[in-house]
Image: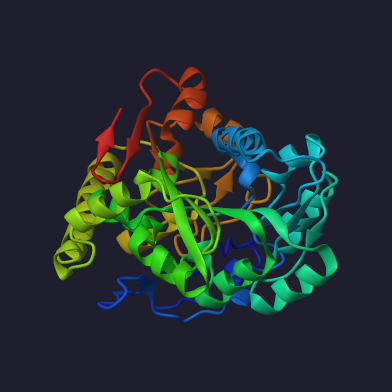
Length: 388
């Protein structure tokens, strides 16, 4: 597979495209699900890395609600300090800035960091780990709240990353980490969330083990609908007086009941993936035979995993629309499907629109439905082929 966010220009289409094996393994000791490491983060999160969190309206609202809630629940004031790891384009921290709460973003990709700075945010442009945490502790002090949304899976040395969190967390501070729950990946066969940028696929059981090694403990867990089903895990220092809430044991019990610490939870996954792909290929072949115009929406990394594993090319799907201007005019890696604006997609009047980021399909359909012909059918492929 090519790296899923390595979007191509017209010029780069003329050059060889890098591709790496994409294999996932399960540790039978700690039950961490992890990709075999073929790529370095510097090769994936480049200066022109094109993912911007603010593209999704629903994700912006999710971030706003979290910020407002955390300010109230944790009693954050202008004397507090908030740090976000993988702060991207400032989608979350801008809410703390507006509330007058000092904050700092840590973001390794130049384009996203620049977008955050335009909003008045301070951003340190580094890959975070224990070494960087020591430097930040000296320069900025320790944080009352550390937020790390959908980044834990992206770090190859996950133990070093967690050690860094322990270093910059104030003695009475808390950490909020969100990540897609591997339980949902397995139950709903969300194989398209597997790509090179995601080194790890996480359960609460494994997260608890890893943070425990760094002198931290989980005290609360929330189940979220985001990204196909995520966990928000609240963490503090081991010696903190915060009690461990019943939510922790509830999620751990659910994971145990699903067999996540046994082989049986993982057996048969590959066959279920192949069944989904066969179903999608059959639909596309039939629609093409009928002369239908098939297009896609959302130049998402997960979509690239699906398209490339299924062997779908620009001869099968003519264009993919995306609201991110940073992606428009480029081409999807592997499939080479051209990326256009939503307005261009609407003008082409497709018969079928394959929604690749199925986790925001409700948002996409509500935006596009009034602008497309009544005969246009929306399609999602995971966990099964659905036409609506």
